[in-house]
Length: 283
Image 1 (cartoon, rainbow, N blue to C red):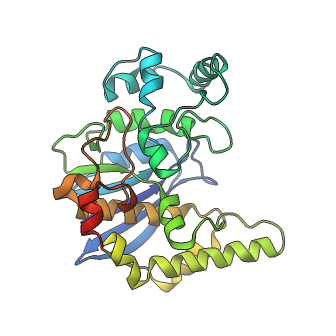
Image 2 (cartoon, one colour; image 1 turned 120 degrees about the vertical axis):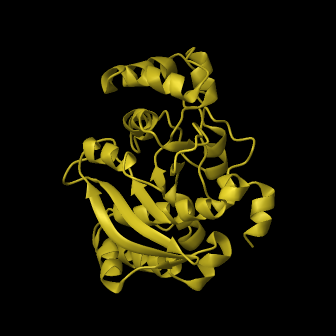
């Protein structure tokens, strides 16, 4: 099975592309074949429409919190409310969220989806620092317009399946909260380079199969490239591919997504967030 991991950005360009790791899963071995830079949204849309079958894990929130959806009176279907946001440009979307949060008490401004609470992720309403709200606006409408099966938001019979990934969960499992992105000054740069080395060693270790059910294979030259890239975007893309491969391995059990997952909000696919029976089977 062809597996893709994509580290998304709300403003792709030559210097800040959507990072894509193209992989093949065969006999429980996930081989990373190449790294590709998607430098604009047209290329991303072409990818979503490319011939299947394939499974992709993409790192951005596919949905918004149910509370926000209901408070704003948006349609009660994923495609419906994503269509409402698509009609807004970025400035209007940011103004909408800013007006909403200004009227609310401290601590009740940026809501979390159920899966965000489980994963320790940021609110998809956030517009600054890590601007996942902007990523939602740029990404979700493009998913909605594609023919692909978007789980659990819009399941269908298409042989192209898109899952929400969150590479921080993999990194935390393997190296804790050690920072591996960026160079930083002096010794800090060396520490982050070593953290990328360590993370890749753990990703390619046999022990990973205990939790993800696959062994990751990466050529030495590509390993060096992943370590040398300070932003860590392509490394994150590999981690997204790992989560997508795990989801594919659980396709007969709901792709590792619990039955209680809200299709309005979406769900991140990872063993740590799987329903209890899947957790039992993964160990």
